[in-house]
Amino acid sequence: MKILKYLLILVLVLIVGFFSLGFITPSVSYDSVITVDKPIEEAWAVMADESRVSEWLEDVKRLEPVSGTPNTVGAVSNIYVNNGGEEMMMQETITKYEAPHTIAMTFTMDMMDMDYEMTLQEKNGKVEITSHSKTTGKGMLTKSIVAMMPSMMKAQEDTNMNNLKNVINENTKNYFPEANIQSIEE
Image (tube, one colour):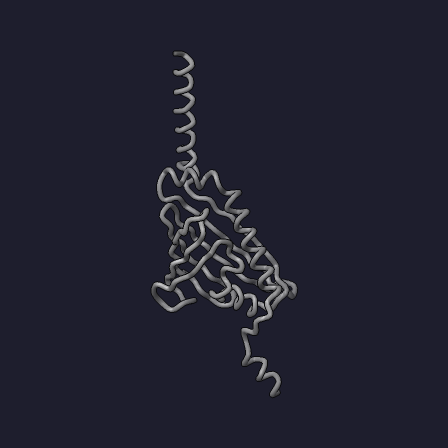
């Protein structure tokens, strides 16, 4: 009987400890930085090209505009991702759009919300791209789960950013055809 009593106490302590994590750390923040060897305008164009999102964001299946004009403040889209074999939908709302330097958005999901900002800055002839994410669980259970996952979320963002780096550096699509015609005429 003593073993059962101690086992029950241990389980209660673990449960209280788990939920305490969500109370102490209701959200996590993490950054990721890459550097690309393309002009800032081209890096921005590749990053903002919705037809290429699945090339650098793992598991994105499709994007569906809901309201507003794409790539403007207030635009809302549903993003469908493969989440362990099941389709999950999150809603993206653009909160800041200052091409070619900053885009910020809020992602709303069933269990959590994420504030995300990406900035592009020219440095030493290259472009440094920084992402900043802040993820918050919506209830005590998901706050506790989020509190336990910052290294996993950071690793996923690092993978996404490295994929973006490769997509930008390997880009061959001409996003500025008028500029090429104009420079030939001059």
